[in-house]
Length: 241
Image (cartoon, rainbow, N blue to C red; front, side, top):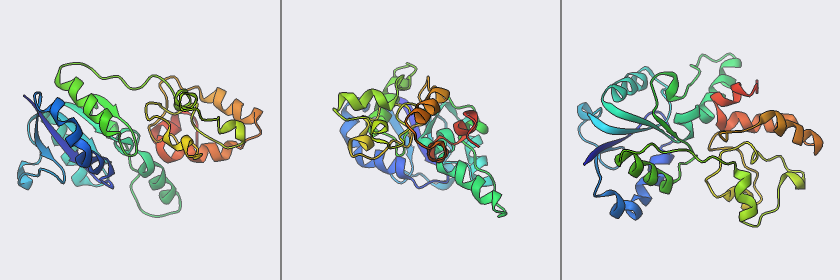
């Protein structure tokens, strides 16, 4: 049996809450391969036993405190594989951008970073919150000794399959062309633009994206604000200041 732990650092605990309330749907597949040793809010041994020796550790949230950073280092040392769970853990997410905004206003706060700034991350499972089915699939692949791969297409791939008209063609700024797909595009289906909560697509072409916005007469500034929200550290890489 593969020993698994699911931890949470500073976060809203949205990802683990979604998984905890839906995991029963996947137990028949998982029970032959996986033994949960620790699961925040579900199965919590005494505090001193939190950082257990496990084969796979999933970690939600960002290291916002010194205690978080020490816990993360210990989790890394005691885990054969470490998976960042959710967008905050994987890109820094809202905490990454908001902490910098607050810092620029003169407040004394630490700029938050994704897990990969402090430790080696073997796989990033993004989403806000993470997709429980994707969590189960990732866990099953890792338990069987395979390396999972993120979706290799953007959110725009899903919209035509769902019969949805392109929001960009309606004059609405949407990050679908540069956001990682695999979610089924639920937001555009409700006429809500994609904000890229799963992070950037693997082959996202941001230069072309901004040219598309220009051609359609849409504002760069709004797209840049949207990019900052969830793409965290990746927003810096695409020169969103």
